[in-house]
Amino acid sequence: MGLENLLLGFQVAITPTNLFIAVVGITLGTIIGVLPGLGGANGVAILLPLTFTMPPTSAIILLTSLYWGALFGGAITSVLFNIPGEPWSVATTFDGYPLARQGHSGQALTAAFTSSFVGAFFSIVLITFFAPILAEIALKFGPPEFFAIQFLTFSSFVGLGGGNPLKSLASILIGFILASVGLDIVTGQLRLTFGFTDLMKGFDFIVAVIGLFGIGEILLSVEEGLKFQGARTAMNLRVVLDTWKILPRYYRTFIRGSVIGFWMGFKPGGATPASFMSYAFAKRFSKNPERFGKGEIEGIVAPETAAHAAGVAAMLPMITLGIPGSPTAAVMLGGLIIWGLQPGPMLFVDNPEFVWGLIASMYTGNVIGVLMVLAFVPFFAAILRIPFAILTPLIVIVCAIGSYAVHNSMIDIWYMLIFGVVGYVFKKLDYPLAPLVLALVLGDLAENALRQSLIMSQGSLTIFLTRPIAGAITAVAIFFFLLPAITPWWRRLRGLPAAAPAPRET
Image 1 (cartoon, one colour):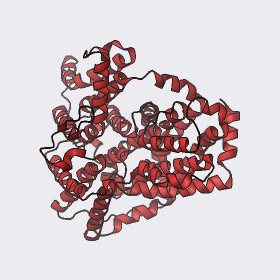
Image 2 (tube, rainbow, N blue to C red):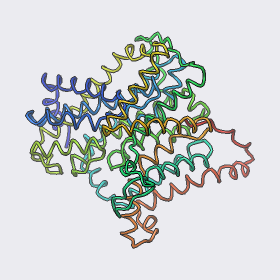
Image 3 (cartoon, one colour):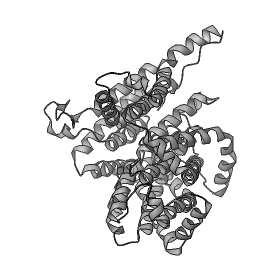
Image 4 (spheres, rainbow, N blue to C red):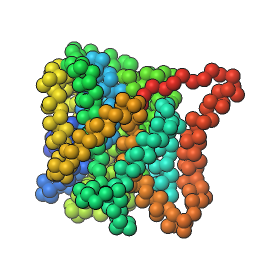
C-alpha cells in the first residue's frame, strides 16, 4: 500500500470517460438526495442494472459518485425546507433551517457542503494508508461491541444533548416503542399491531422523518400565520468566500466530527448515528451551546462532517471484508459480486486497478461534487424566494411522493400525516425529536445486537463489561447517562452557579 498504488488508481480515475461518469453520477445523486424518500441506497439500486455492461471500475465510479451526490444533496432540503432528504441530514436541520430562515441559506449551504468535503477527505486519506490495519480492528467487533456503540449513541443524547434529560429519555423510549411495531423476525410474533395488518411491516424511518420534520414544520408555520416567507439571500461568490473565512475557527469540530464519522462508518454503525453523535458533542463542548438550534454554523459543520466521513468509511469494510457498512454499501457489494469480483483482502492483490481506481475516484468524485453543488448554490437558495402559498403545497406534494415511493403504498402517506401531527405536538411541548428519530432508526439494530449478545452470554449482562472493547464503550455510555445527575452536584462542590436552562434541541 503506498503512493505508487494511489498513482495507479488516479491513472484509472482521471480518464475522460471516468471523469464524465463521475459528473453524471454526482448530478443524479444530488437530485436523488434532494428528493425525500429516494435516498442513496435506492438510487444505487435503481441504477445498478445499468452498470452490468460497463467495466467494473467505471461501474463502481458511477455508483460511488451517485452516493457522494446523494450525501451532498441530502443537506439541501434540510437547510432550505427543514425536510431531510437523507436520514443522516436530520441533524443538519437543527441549525441549517433556522439559519436559512434568517436569510443566510447560502452561508448554511456553503458550510454544509464544505464540511461534507472535509469529512470525506479525512476518511479517504485514512482509507488510502490504513485500510488493512483498520480492517483487522473491525474484525474484533461482535454483537456486544455493536450494542455498546448503540448504547453510547443514545447516552450521548441524554448526557450531552443539553436539553431536559428526562424529555430526551422519554423521546428515546417512544422511538423504541415505534421501532418495535410489526413482525418480530426472530420469534415470528406480532408486536403492537392491535389486529391491523398494515402495521405488520412497522413504520419506515423515511416516512416518519418526512412527517415529523417536514409536515410538523409546515403545521407550525401555518400556526404562526404563514410567516415562512421566501427570504432574499443575495447569494453570490462573496457569500461562499466569506463563509470559508469563518469556517477555520471550527477546526476542532471538523476534527472531532471526522474522527467520529470515520469510527462509526468503518464498522457497521452508519452515517446517521455519526451525525447525531457529532452534533451532540459539538453542542456539549461549544462555548455558546445556547446558540445551537437557533442557527449556529457549528451545528451544521458537526453533523455534515461526520456524515460524509462515515459515508466514505463505510466503503472500507465492504472492500476489505465484504461487510457493508451502510445500506448503500450493501447494494454496491451486490454489484461487486455481479461484476465477478470477490470482496476481501485478496481484492487488493487480484484487482489492484479496481481497488485503487475506486479509492482515487473518491478523491476526484468529492472534489467534483463540492465544486458542482457550490456552483449551484444560487439556484437552490433562490427557491426560498417562492411565496409560502405556492411553496407549501409543493412541499406537501414532494413529501407525499417521497413517502409513497418508499413502499408504493398509500398507507405511508397516512403515516406521514400522523407523524406530522406528532412532530407538531413534540415541538409545542418542547420535547426533542432527534432522540425519537434516532431510536426509530437504531431500534431494530440495537435489539438484535442485544439479543445476540445475551445468547452468547446465556443471558448474562456482564458480557458488556467483561469484553475489553465493549466494556470501555459501555463505561463511557453509563457515565454519559449519569452526567446530568453528576453535573449539578459537581458545580455545587466547586462553588459554581447553576447552569442556565438549555434551549430546545429541535
